[in-house]
Image (cartoon, rainbow, N blue to C red):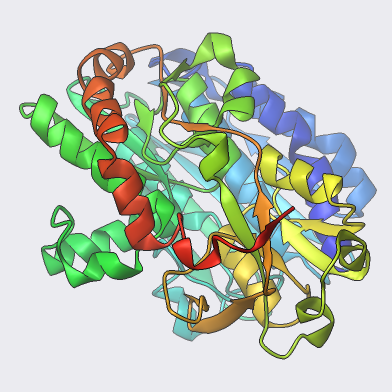
Length: 446
């Protein structure tokens, strides 16, 4: 059921994703809201019919905005994605409504509603927090709403309200100014996955985000190491500039936001093969992690004997993996290993949840630095299949926008980071976090 639902949403969202990535709409400009929403919803309409749900669109005539059409299109994508994955899961015939009208002479009101499962009252106050994690497909999951709030508040200059009752659906009301504020050209926008965003905020609250000697860094991951090196380099080489973290829903969304200049740089590295697909629309640093350094484990639950007994590649065929197709190197590696059952999931924490609840058998993950190599995520504990390392054949790079601050970051910030790569400081940090793990140096490489 879960796999079918996710495939349905993947198909449903494809046209809108093409619409977003195909437009250079990050610049502020004048446009008809009715035309923009009609184009976005038209891309969804045929697939909505296949789902047996109903979509109603009612946009007031003659509403002209001077705003960011790319952000509004992305907003619509996230709202529909949230409704189909969560609110209408298990609903035989759902109703989604999108209405837009002038609230006053300077403001447009957009109301998005569904008749789905609704959100539990206890969770409603938390629904806009960056990482509210609940079982996929259950009421109250709220996937993507934090990103919607960020777009509404920080890009479009508006506000967003969420009203919901269990069993009675959800209504999301957004008030957007017809004249959006200018997004500051003096701000370096650093895109990071939501889990990285949350962890960095926690380190900032503890006052140790820039302290590499802090015990807090004993348990950080590769992506947090990359972000710390980047943020420190921004301090060192562009001290007069302001840098803000922007949470993004997933890996592919971050790359799309670079293409449309909604971000200056991604705060965590990308695979070279993924960046090459859009090489003309992004800037790419020299490698900070080489192909030889990308060795990961096959992690599973301590009680999964079938997974833990794997000793040859043929043993993987009957295991159920979870990964993201957007992580092209990981996905291709699993295929090359002969894995037959792999569920496509976009969010790391959701992958962890599926593994913890036994919906899948295994996941690829960097080795932990703990003595027992156990991986602790979101209160769950996983262990590696002993004796096996998996080589992810590819190098990792920082990706930057070719517009705005991107060229300046490439010229002034990247050389400082690459000097730390050459000196071995970056590799030392990867050793400290366990990404480069000497404890597995004698294990077989697949």
